[in-house]
Amino acid sequence: MDRYGVMGNPIKHSLSPSIHRMFAETSEQNLCYEAMLVAEDAFKQAVEGFSDSGGKGLNVTVPFKEQAWQLATKRSQRAELAGAVNTLSFVDGEIFGENTDGVGLVTDILNNHHGEIKGKRILIVGAGGAVRGILAPILAEQPAELVLVNRTVSKAEGLAEHFQHLGKIHPCGFDALDDRPFDCLINGSSASLGGQLPPLPSGCIAPHSWCYDMMYGAEPTPFNVWAEQQGAAKVMDGLGMLVEQAAEAFFIWRHVRPKTSPVLEALRNSLS
Ligand code: ATR
Image 1 (cartoon, helix red, strand yellow):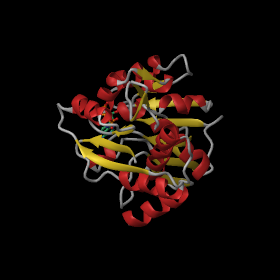
Image 2: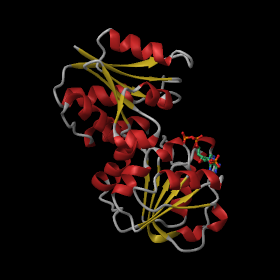
Image 3: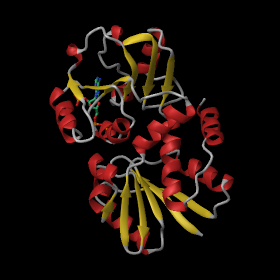
C-alpha cells in the first residue's frame, strides 16, 4: 500500500490524517496516511528515512515548511516564491516541493463560497509565512487592488517587492488604512491564535464585504466575531482552505481530484 503522512511538531491535533483517509475512501485509492511527530532538529533525517523506506509523499506543517523548501530538489514556481513547502513528493530520486496553501484558499473562496477575487479590492492582514504562501495564487486572480497591512510595515514592504513581478501590492501599516471599505478582507496574521484582533478601523468593512480568517476553530475567531459585528455580508474561516490545500496535495500524489464537500461537512460537524 502506498504510504503518505504529515510531519510537524506538534502534530497530535492535525486533521490531515482524517482528511486524507476520507479522500482515499471516497476516491477508492488504496493508501495509508499517518501523522508523524518529528523532533525540531530531526526533520531532514525523518524525511529521508520516510522516503528511503518507500514513502511516496508528505505534508509538512509547523515548524518545518521552510526546511522542507530547502530539502526539495525541485520546486514549483509558487513554492519557490512562497519560500515554504507544505507538500513533498518522492519521484525518481527527486524531492518535489509544492505549496498548496494559496490554491487551497482561492479554491475555497471561489468554488465553495462562490466568491470573487478578480476585479475586487482586497485587504490581506499579516506579512508572515502564512501570507507569503498565498500571495502568488491571490495575485493570479487579478484583484483590482491588493493592500497588505502589517504591524511591522517593513515586512509588508518586503513582500510587496518580492512579488512585484506578479502584480501590484500596496504595503502599509494599520494607521494608514482610511475608511474606504474593502470587498474582501483576509486575515492571514496569527493574531487569532492569541485571541487577539488586528487593529483594523471599522470603516474597512461595508455591508457587501466578505471576511475570511485563515485560522479556524470550534468557536468563531476574534476576527470573524468582529466582522459579524461590523455587519459583513459573509464571514468564513480557514477550515475550507485546510481541506482544499489537502485536496491539491492528494491530486499531486494520486492524479485524482477528491470530493471535498463531504469531508468539509464531516470536519465541521466533528469540530462543533
Ligand atoms: P505565520 O507563519 O502564522 O504567518 P509569522 O511568520 O510569525 O507566523 O507571522 C505572524 C504574522 O501575524 C505577522 O504578520 C505578525 O505581525 P508582525 O510582523 O508585525 O509581527 C502578525 N500578528 C501577530 N499577532 C498580531 C496581532 N495581535 N495583531 C496584528 N498582527 C499580528
